[in-house]
Amino acid sequence: MTDPHRQAERIRLLIAEDQTLIREGLATLLAQQNDDFEIVGAAADGEQAIEFARRYRPDVI
Image (cartoon, rainbow, N blue to C red; front, side, top):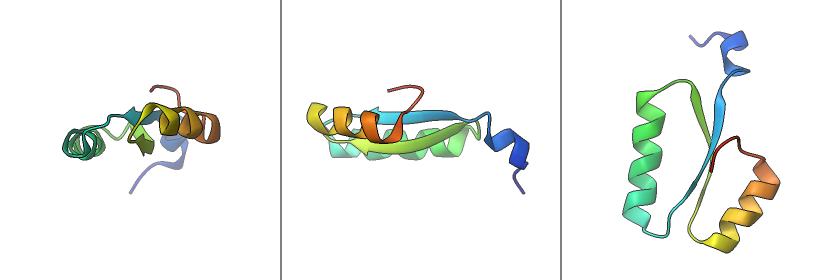
């Protein structure tokens, strides 16, 4: 069970990668490796990355 106080400390990530296999693989790898990360979106191109960044306000792109 996840500690609710710990969730507030999670680093919000936005993945921006045009190659589908790499984008999905990176999202899977990050989600499995570290509970400190929350993937808020995965953009397929620069325009989508800007849109997602404005919408989801990630800590890291």
